[in-house]
Amino acid sequence: MSSQINFADKTILVTGGAGFLGREVVKALKNHGVKQEKIIIPRSAEFDLRDQAQAMQMIKKFNPDKVIHLAARLGGIGDNMAHPAAYFYDNMMLGINIIEACRTNKVNKLVNIGTVCSYPKIVPAPFKEEDLWNGYPEETNAPYGVSKKAVMVYAEAVNREFGFNTVNLLVTNLYGPGDDFREQTSHVIPAIIKKMDNAKRNGDAEIIAWGDGSPSRDFVYVSDAAEGIVRAAALHNSPEPVNIGAGEEYTIKQLMEILKEETGFMGEIKWDTSRPNGQPRRLLDISRARNAFGFNPATGFREGLKNTYNWYLSNYDLIHAQKPKFAESRQA
Ligand SMILES: NC(=O)c1ccc[n+]([C@@H]2O[C@H](COP(=O)([O-])OP(=O)(O)OC[C@H]3O[C@@H](n4cnc5c(N)ncnc54)[C@H](OP(=O)(O)O)[C@@H]3O)[C@@H](O)[C@H]2O)c1
Figure 1 (cartoon, rainbow, N blue to C red):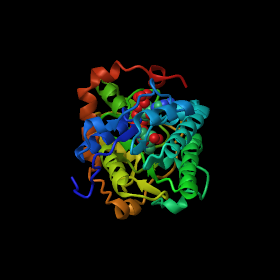
Figure 2 (figure 1 turned 45 degrees about the vertical axis):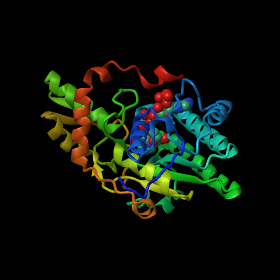
Figure 3 (figure 1 turned 90 degrees about the vertical axis):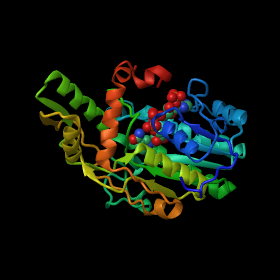
Figure 4 (figure 1 turned 60 degrees about the vertical axis):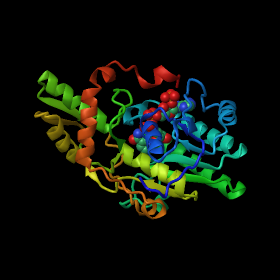
């Protein structure tokens, strides 16, 4: 790993550090020499960060040098459509409370994780950070996207007013080992892997997929994104938004073809066009991240999908015994 990165003996607190991206961020910190005892991973059962007093209490207790803020309410299109109010409220409160707690307790730097869902529904591809405000996000995930974008504006505002060091990263669709395969909340890649694998096991001739397969996505492998976040935490000091993606675009139809080959599912894909497509196109311009902190996503898409499917197979029993995401840790 790069010798440019040196966290010395800093204490780093990772909100959401036990989640899908969080576990990889923690691994990346360790790869860069941060000792286990210097990494704090608070859990929602101990500190519900939607509550400002609990956010303050947490930062006071651990007194970290840097905070990487990943905690969020997160799910696929279905859960976003079913609970738009929870997506807006939770993510807004989590973000504002963490920024305030960090600012008032003199944390040195906050890395705030935003999302590609904040971009306008229609914007020229590849998406450039300066286009972030040129329209309203796609309707199915707008409450999530707008709340994360508002938190970013607050992070920029406290930088301007108080000189508090904030970094804002806009992360595109993640995938990889450790992803969420639960029906209620999974995103497209784990949802389709599970459907294809089930169909293969049951000898089903077809699977149903949402939409018409035309939308494109920029999928970034989770450990590549985590490495980018850690590089930003070490090397970047500016609140303007920075895209984190693979910088490559695949349509959902192309994704299906690769997944058919990787899972060995030989049947048909039936498109349920009564279900939403989501945003028509997603591709990020990642040149700002490359130039600012040497971000270099290295995992090929097919290789990443292969690893994800292998992880699914090796964790099959565990995955199928999981309870729904939101009932297990906290109420919406
Ligand atoms: N996954 C993606 O495709 C994607 C794409 C773009 C951006 N992002 C961003 O990346 C970040 C991490 O996403 P992820 O996929 O890793 O999500 P995840 O697996 O759902 O992890 C989120 C974590 O947030 C914590 N959390 C949720 N509500 C909380 C609360 N009220 N108080 C304290 N902690 C709370 C949970 O902690 P406990 O486990 O302790 O309950 C959970 O581990 C999020 O900010 C998300 O917006 C993700």
